[in-house]
Structure formats: structure tokens, C-alpha cells
Length: 287
Image (cartoon, rainbow, N blue to C red; front, side, top):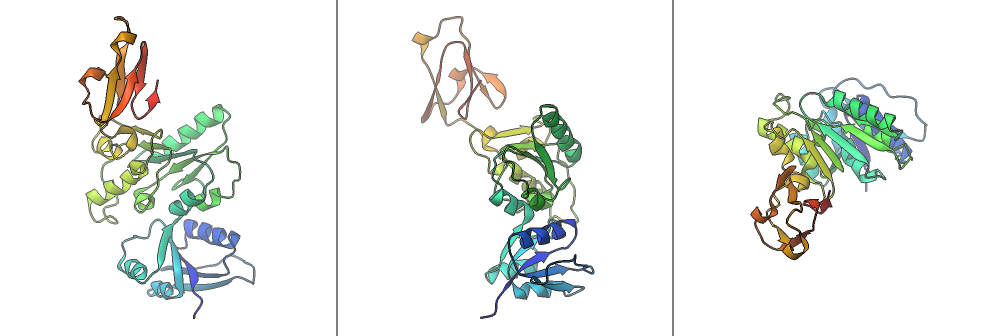
């Protein structure tokens, strides 16, 4: 049976980072595919690299069992879909990063404008607090290069575009959704596809994760609603133990960032108890 190779689809900055990663991981048979001419760096002679460029660069898929696509390569391309239907595996840098990284200290930032400025400001805050951090993703260090950092105390601040988020099945512990309008419609098929890709930043968040977003801006708030952190929590029961609460006690909870009277919530299956002089954040977070 013919031995298949692992492929790199797109050989710009991200593709070159992928090559370094594959070499570190011990892969010896690699296929590089790019429509533009490819210039390879100097590598060990024990590594076999096949190059496919020009009009028929995707012919290299026939030699691969798995392909790591650069973010700018559309994941629903017909040739990629055919490759997957025949048993091939397609991944992206961001997907591999979330699989391999050894920490949950990840802040992801997306939006139409302001991502670079925001990650820079977060980095400045962490630096001032003397917390180790690195910027990566669409801005900063390619994500597979970040995996060379073995310091598990590092916080990773990732600028993530819709291209990178479109196939992501994981979400960072902290997601920041900036103002979203419409962009890259020469790449995305519809506005809805673009916005749905953005939503992957927070779609797979877990209890105790955090979503920061612009509540008064559509469709940003609608995208953020995909987060567990701010989803509708009407399934929560709040039980008031009146005998434990003096008349002057604080009888409030904080739901989706708003202080509310707990007696107005729908009562169903799960139970939270409100004690005297305390506010509670539902989703198990108490303030």
C-alpha cells in the first residue's frame, strides 16, 4: 500500500509555520501545495518534501492522508470536500493549537474592526500585572509556533478572524466579541456564514468561561448569545429562603449582567439559593 504524506495547503507565513511544526513533530513525508511559486527553507535531508504549485497545485491532495490548511483557504472548497469524502482529514492551525496547548489561559478576540488594538491593550495590561503572555493568531506569532512555549503560566491572547474560526470546534476560556458588521464577502458566501463563523469563538464555551461583548450593538450581541455564559438561563430555579433573609437584605441576582429580582424568574428544575446580603451570578458564578 502506498505511504501517504501529510500536506500543507498554502505556503505563506502560516504555511511556513506549519512546516516547522510538522518537522518538530517528526513527520518525514510532507506535501506543500500553493498556487504561487514555492521556495522551501533549508531542511534536513532526511525529510522528503514534494511541492505542487501553479494551476494544478491541489493535485497534491492525492498524495495526502491529512492536510493542514492555511486560514485563507476556503474550507468548503469542492476539492477539499471531495478529499474528505474519500477519507482525508483537514485541519487548521487554530484547531491543532486548541488540541495541543497545555493551558486553558486563552483569550480569543474577534470582530470586524479593532482586533489588533484590543489584543495589544490586553497584552499591555498583563505586562503591567507581570503576567506572562503572548499574542498570536492573525496578529503576532503563528499559533503553531506558540506551542514551542512550554511555560504553562503563559496567557495566550489570540486575534482570530472568521477564516480561522469557521471550522473551530473549541472556544477559549475568555472570548471577546467586538463590533461585527460585514466583511470578506468575496470569501464568505453570505453575511450569515461570516457571522456564524465569528460565533464559533464563544459557541463551545463551558460553565465558568467568560464572554465580553458589546451588548447594545447588533449583530455583536446576537453572536455573543451563542456563549454558554450569556445564554438564556430561564431553566434555573431560584429558591428564596425567606426565613433566612431580613427585610433589609439584598434580594437580587445578576442575570446576563443585569440586576434582577429573583422572584420574577421562571421556576423549573435546577435550584439556586439566595442568602442574605449576597448577589449571585447564575451559571454557578457568585459575586
